Length: 87
Image (cartoon, rainbow, N blue to C red; front, side, top):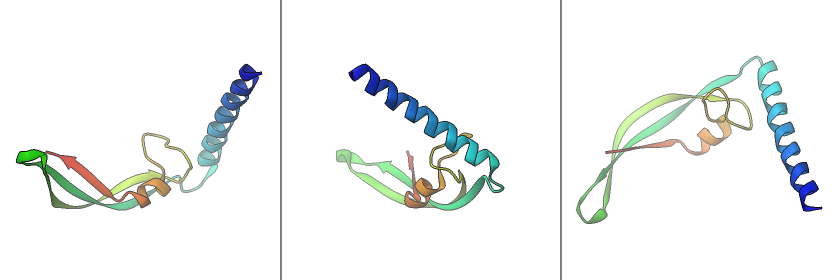
Protein backbone atom coordinates (compact mmCIF):
# COMPACT_ATOMS: atom_id res chain seq x y z
CA UNK A 1 0.00 0.00 0.00
CA UNK A 2 2.76 2.46 0.97
CA UNK A 3 4.73 1.47 -2.12
CA UNK A 4 1.78 2.36 -4.38
CA UNK A 5 1.32 5.73 -2.70
CA UNK A 6 5.01 6.57 -3.09
CA UNK A 7 4.96 5.47 -6.72
CA UNK A 8 1.91 7.66 -7.34
CA UNK A 9 3.62 10.66 -5.75
CA UNK A 10 6.75 10.15 -7.84
CA UNK A 11 4.71 9.84 -11.03
CA UNK A 12 2.74 12.99 -10.13
CA UNK A 13 5.98 14.92 -9.54
CA UNK A 14 7.44 13.77 -12.86
CA UNK A 15 4.22 14.64 -14.69
CA UNK A 16 4.18 18.12 -13.09
CA UNK A 17 7.80 18.77 -14.09
CA UNK A 18 7.25 17.58 -17.66
CA UNK A 19 4.07 19.66 -17.95
CA UNK A 20 5.88 22.73 -16.65
CA UNK A 21 8.68 22.14 -19.17
CA UNK A 22 6.22 21.80 -22.06
CA UNK A 23 4.33 24.96 -21.09
CA UNK A 24 7.61 26.88 -20.85
CA UNK A 25 8.77 25.50 -24.22
CA UNK A 26 5.65 26.73 -26.02
CA UNK A 27 5.58 30.20 -24.42
CA UNK A 28 6.64 33.12 -26.56
CA UNK A 29 8.40 34.88 -23.71
CA UNK A 30 10.29 32.24 -21.76
CA UNK A 31 12.55 34.53 -19.74
CA UNK A 32 12.28 37.92 -18.06
CA UNK A 33 14.54 40.16 -15.99
CA UNK A 34 14.11 41.36 -12.42
CA UNK A 35 16.04 44.17 -10.71
CA UNK A 36 17.91 42.72 -7.70
CA UNK A 37 19.69 44.60 -4.90
CA UNK A 38 23.19 43.29 -4.16
CA UNK A 39 24.48 43.49 -0.59
CA UNK A 40 27.97 42.69 0.69
CA UNK A 41 27.83 40.68 3.92
CA UNK A 42 31.05 41.48 5.81
CA UNK A 43 31.91 39.31 8.81
CA UNK A 44 33.07 41.40 11.79
CA UNK A 45 34.55 40.49 15.16
CA UNK A 46 32.21 38.75 17.57
CA UNK A 47 30.39 36.93 14.73
CA UNK A 48 28.55 40.11 13.73
CA UNK A 49 27.68 40.84 10.12
CA UNK A 50 27.73 44.26 8.48
CA UNK A 51 25.71 44.74 5.29
CA UNK A 52 26.94 47.25 2.70
CA UNK A 53 24.98 48.07 -0.47
CA UNK A 54 26.68 47.05 -3.71
CA UNK A 55 24.23 48.48 -6.23
CA UNK A 56 21.58 46.82 -8.32
CA UNK A 57 21.70 44.40 -11.21
CA UNK A 58 19.23 42.77 -13.58
CA UNK A 59 18.91 39.00 -13.11
CA UNK A 60 17.31 36.66 -15.63
CA UNK A 61 14.44 34.40 -14.57
CA UNK A 62 12.06 31.96 -16.30
CA UNK A 63 8.27 32.31 -16.50
CA UNK A 64 7.46 28.91 -15.01
CA UNK A 65 6.67 27.26 -11.70
CA UNK A 66 10.03 25.46 -11.41
CA UNK A 67 13.63 26.42 -12.24
CA UNK A 68 14.69 25.68 -15.83
CA UNK A 69 17.73 26.43 -18.01
CA UNK A 70 19.78 27.37 -14.95
CA UNK A 71 17.50 30.28 -14.00
CA UNK A 72 15.18 30.62 -11.00
CA UNK A 73 11.44 31.10 -11.53
CA UNK A 74 10.29 34.74 -11.75
CA UNK A 75 7.74 34.35 -8.92
CA UNK A 76 10.60 33.36 -6.58
CA UNK A 77 13.06 36.02 -7.74
CA UNK A 78 10.46 38.79 -7.41
CA UNK A 79 9.89 37.89 -3.76
CA UNK A 80 13.63 37.49 -2.99
CA UNK A 81 15.12 40.64 -4.50
CA UNK A 82 18.08 40.93 -2.08
CA UNK A 83 21.21 39.09 -3.24
CA UNK A 84 23.80 38.55 -0.50
CA UNK A 85 27.50 38.40 -1.42
CA UNK A 86 29.59 36.92 1.40
CA UNK A 87 32.98 38.53 1.99
